[in-house]
Length: 314
Ligand code: ATP
Image 1 (cartoon, helix red, strand yellow):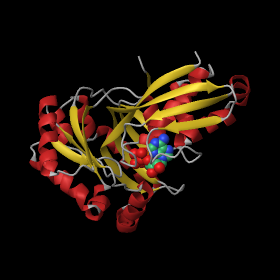
Image 2 (tube, protein in one colour; image 1 turned 120 degrees about the horizontal axis):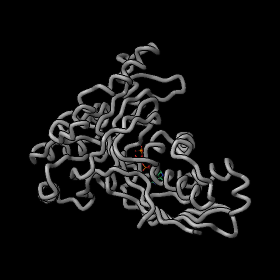
Image 3 (tube, helix red, strand yellow; image 1 turned 60 degrees about the vertical axis):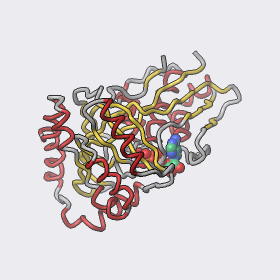
Image 4 (cartoon, protein in one colour; image 1 turned 90 degrees about the vertical axis):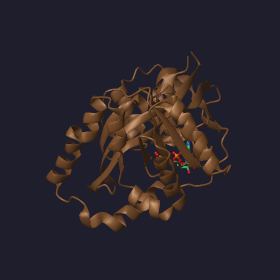
């Protein structure tokens, strides 16, 4: 087959704890990542003239080497030069549905799709583990985006342990189109404000990361106890993003007052999600928020948690 259409889901963070600093300059994290149905569509095909080309329908997404999907393809050309010489380059078309710079891993899931797509196009037969290793060199969220579902992510976010599936739970997701939060800014500001409380020695760092495996959120997920999951949502980055972005704080408060099961900012924001007990409630909450904030800049989605990462479109 010379072309594939792939579904690349976004992710939310059900849990994000910043434990300490790492020697590589990143933070040691303990997260629980969750794929959602909101997804980009990636068309990838062999290109006879060779090279890599990226097309995208979204004006904020670059088409050059600064697109992480481009970098993913470039990585494959250097890792597999024989296949590159045999099959040529790729044309990648991104149909962007996931809000950009939203804390939803939009770029990472595109990169994950390109790794999976090139593996298929060039008949490489890579395992999920091998794809995840390649993905980790592109970005911390890329390995998770490949397999998706529900998982604990430690280290920089690239060390994954799968959790039982939570598909079928409805959420409302809100993001102001024109509001962007830089992920490096969020982590840098967190370090400036809170590094005095970081766990410093190596053994304690590892113990804290391991503790998430036996923590309350994992227990709630194992029981698929939606109410408990919604109550145990946690994101350390809210401590720096909410004070700096009053609109995000306001969304969080409106969701909480709308009677949802729980609400939290995803990743470094600025998107905020609310867990609901049914699709009907999610749609009602969406309408309620729309009535309170009559701003066309605000995008609202009703979507659900899903149990998969990159998939070939049927
Ligand atoms: P994460 O949750 O992994 O931190 P994010 O959802 O906050 O990511 P992205 O949507 O990946 O953020 O966008 C971050 C920046 O990366 C944007 O400002 C955009 O210009 C750039 N970018 C590069 N490639 C892509 C891509 N394929 N899709 C979206 N943004 C991209």
